Length: 157
Image (cartoon, rainbow, N blue to C red):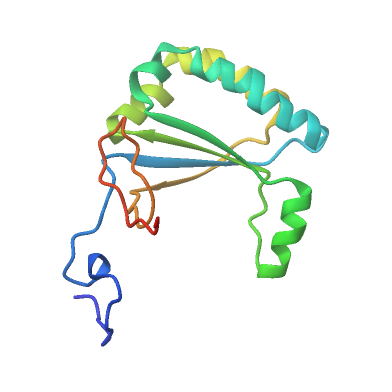
């Protein structure tokens, strides 16, 4: 059993006895490093345009992925982040949401995905990427209406 400390919760929605606000999806974060021979400008331009377009063009994507975002860690942001402590040694992170692990497998193992993205990935990404797979517990903010999750806390006046 998890250990609990004596704490007076300001927000009862976060208390030990409250249910977490897990969103009805799995979030897959794919962390990338650019090829050494590719400039940051070329990397980010290609990733947000050609690579994103190839990804979205697959039926496997349209059938199984609910949300896709790209997070870019520019050299300037990476340098600023060093003031906070350890910095992940990656240039970018794609985040994809699926309803289930099976949906992720349908997308990521589809021949269509491999045909569309394997060759392109080799043009600008170091392979293999690093993955983090998780459930999202939404604390503050709006849930995606597409997936029907419950909103988190709001501090709007």
